[in-house]
Length: 577
Image (cartoon, rainbow, N blue to C red):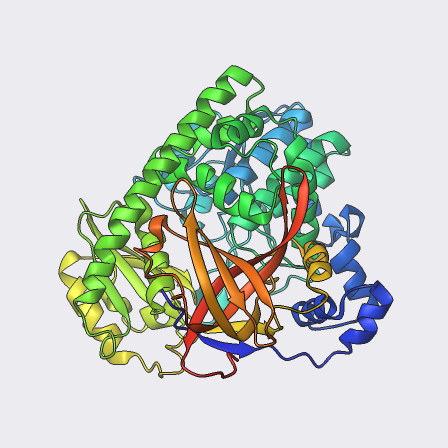
């Protein structure tokens, strides 16, 4: 399928040629670096290219984190019982494992509890506090949640407990004032009075910073940093500054981890021995951890990360792999049903997609909304039916603040929350049609806002330094949120031929002739059979291609490989930008 987005050339006002000379980079790579950073400042570039664990922000700089560490050390010394309350996604799972490991290392009497996605919903609740009281718990320590759990904190304090909150979500706001819970300590880099220089931590990265104040055990901290790196990518945090440092460290050290659970997960998913990239973290390891909280219990994934028994680890890893495969199947089925609903509606008149899928499992509603949003480039809300009414998840595009728009129709909901790009909500089933009508009635999206834009760097595919570019691009990794991988674009490419191959027939070699008359071989990856060939450029056509060069290694031999990500058929030679 041809790409329908508008391609726009990125602009670079920085002196990237001087940067290329100083850093011995190809000018093309230096330009991409300067565009991603928005700067050629020497210290900023040094941190980007060479930053290591020594460059992490000192944990003492984070407001109330030293108090949290001091309080936990005292509770450990006094033999008080500590209960960690985490969250059911990969970030919450990794956060819980990090805190369990560091507190066990201190000899603490510590346990964990994670809410059930369906029965409890998000975050610490009063039921969990009652359970902790019954278990004789003295101190509650949250991770990746808690900042908005005012009622649960109130119940814990009423029971005489010590409460330590560590979270990275926005504080609730009432009448324009941020509401801090009545806990003994509240660590959250989103609080308005935070003065730390870097604030975009996920829950696990914040837990790692707390761990740095609790132990100097370098071997343990190395393992915990690796867990924080998985969570950082999976939680789609910007890969800048501390996050970039953590993820780079994780990618270098995760393959050789001593964590029995991760070793078993590598074996179970077939990634043992592969070069780790942010893709492996975000699309292989992370989804397996997430699947436990979506379809069963997040306790399974926490136990995997904590176990020291290889046999138990293998069993848990297989369970997570199977759950993730089940999740994939459910997602594919429900996505197709959602797209069928889209085909039946006038998306021009009703561009906000409110899709009622009564039988869709609640656990995959958000994933389905994201898939439809990516395919159709429309704000998408998927609503499912439960035994307590209907629930929904939304995913948005640039220019449509989903949380703000839902706030405009808040009377339709029994509960809702979120941020500009995503939201979750509950409502009576009879209100679903009204939600669709009102959101579309109130929306003011323009044609421009409803058109996806792909940022590209124009570069002739037969550029003489292409192999050097391919070899230097890995210097810019890890790629992800806030640090996009290069997307080069060329035009006037004549398609001399295509050849589909592979066991699943999902790889295609494309022979191209450039505007300069040079013949090149590129490669495309897609679904089985490339949708009957409809997702491939037609031989004899002229295309514009969005592509990325890489170094392919086969049987020990290296060669330049051009991978086409997107293409557009050109009726006549014209710029793709």
